[in-house]
Amino acid sequence: MTWDILRQYFWGDAEEIAHKYFNEWAGRLAFKPEYNTEKKVRDALALPEDADPADKARNEHIKTGLWDLLGNVCLIKCVATHDIRPTCDRR
Image 1 (cartoon, rainbow, N blue to C red):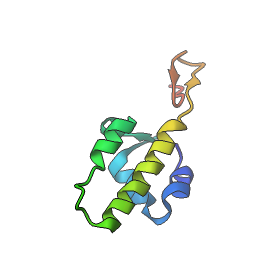
Image 2 (image 1 turned 90 degrees about the vertical axis):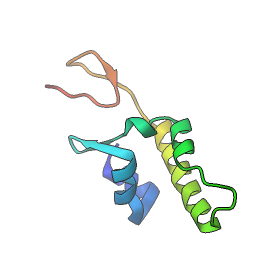
Image 3 (image 1 turned 180 degrees about the horizontal axis):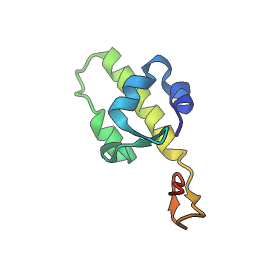
Image 4 (image 1 turned 30 degrees about the horizontal axis):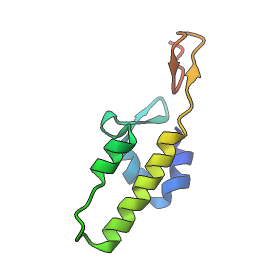
């Protein structure tokens, strides 16, 4: 994923979101292993029922955006390695 895509979802919070939920590699962003499924994201953003409504709204926005991004991962068959993966590294 690119920074531009992340900014479309999270605007001014994109950098904060990137540092917490993504690893950067070769100019691209990839989910950190601890956030690479919907369940992991949901569990990480869970708040108690009596949490502040503003915190709940923010976490819901983050969760929805991350879930959208997880659902939009495109796998590519790399001609160099013949692996099927999110990106192709031609080393």
